[in-house]
Image 1 (cartoon, rainbow, N blue to C red):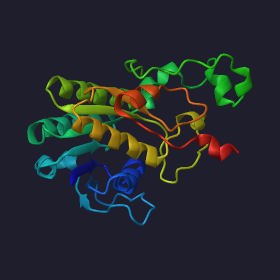
Image 2: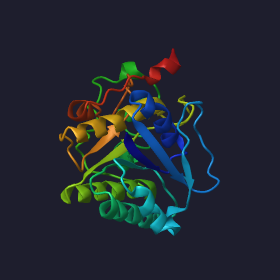
Image 3: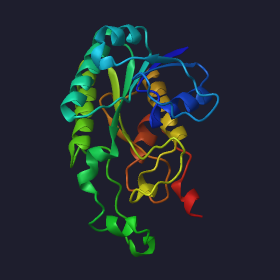
Length: 262
């Protein structure tokens, strides 16, 4: 059994992990903790639905009880404003260090941690890519490297940088932790009208493949703890470096946003 806790497990990413991680390996046993009354975005009837309704920010003892004996902790929860979000991140990581230091942590960053490098798609070649005028892009830009540190442009990006810094701290302390720079993930696994969504889109199954790859690499003793990786599907018109996680952890995305443009 892979004893897994999703902190914030009813949302877009958590719903996908509860659906697809057990399909990848039936040993995943998942508990999700989320705010009371949070809507469950899982649409698949086989998604694991072991829920604990709890505001972890107001119940540190309850959080620590849930962390006992976990093999894998995935931190997905968020709140506003930035000060409250960072305080919750402090709380979660300190509890993980105290209660389950042998577990691996996969924590939510985002492509928005690097958004100042490409957003709002008003500079070349990204504006041309966003307009889907691909034949005018020559040469195609080098993917934004996974090795680059964060470059946020708003509070949302800053909160993700804070998560990445905590993952680096756990690595220094000898614990396995990875920051997932999630792309655009939604519970219907479709396109949205967000600008250039086809480049950042990530299918829920690919998100689960990433988490599973992190866990398996950790078990093999080969995880580069403290790393941050982009978690994007195998999109034809990608602008992010997903070759690094493919090479380092065996990430194997199978979906392509261009399916929606045929």
